[in-house]
Image 1 (cartoon, rainbow, N blue to C red):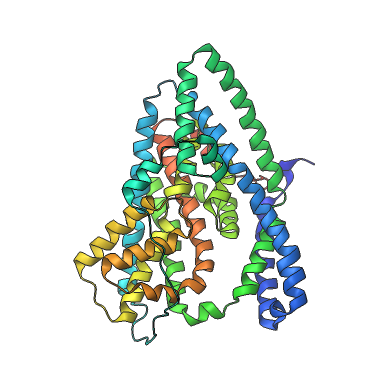
Image 2: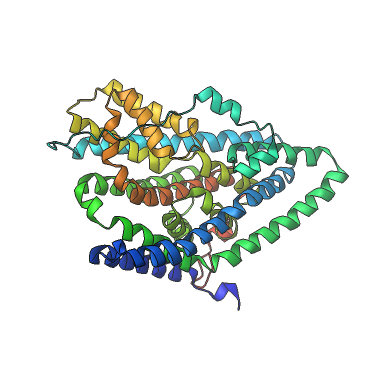
Length: 425
């Protein structure tokens, strides 16, 4: 069987829609609460299929990031170029995050979600404390690279891979022999990605079914305006702002970009994990969008770690929503502080579990709003996280293409080539 003949996008979409339908049917009929169905179907078969699939992809993240980044770093003619790529990448990620939080605040201020609602703040929510920013900067540098790999610490892994790649360049002929081995390993890992993607429709169906059988649409209905507003702003950012960045800074066709990235977006939506999507994103930007591995191996893993545009949008809308419920009028100074704190927090809490709600707690404290109200939106945040992740990986790919174009590391012929209907990814 030839992989290029498999219409994977179609099957992933079918799996996602089927999962939503089956999940809602189970929830609406009450079967999701049936002991046998919950234990053996949802918590048994589907949980097994979904979790094993996501774990299989996460299995690839560390070797893929390390091997690919070593190859990309060592392949540069001038190692000093890495500094330029790093500054451009970080600057673009911060810029898109700043735009995202500003967009969320502006649209939410106009629509006014939460106005007139009389809701008592839940007392059960306790915000986790985010680490100090200086501690995050120090922890970027690993003391034990093996431990960093075992724990999946992406920032430490990136630093070690870059240093190792630079050492290969400086080692001359011996370094070249090791680099040849890494290039071969990179090809093998990418083939493994292709193999695992064959099981994507089943994994997507399983994950989506469990989510909707658990939550249904009831959680959305209770906070309908807030939920709808976050989704709309996310779509505006993903389908309008990102294409504008792509057009202005790289003069690339955003329609072609979105067509070739649809599989990545669907996959990110179903897994709700930017890290689990790294192998799929890497393959898409290199093989479909024409980005050289020298750039993609750095920008994609970094973006999956620090690019929190979707989370920033949620924070902007949630801040206005909670302020309206609490009856607090935010001043322009407070709004500016929210923008700054949310943008910096996107990097300051990189890699911290539950990062979205942690940074939201920081933002609310900065604005003088009660943190307890976060408990209102925790229930539907799981669904919104799926959309946020799809937006985040889109941003990773946009920044990757812009940086690649600026470094003359983009094959525009491949980028502009119409996507094949039978293309795997």
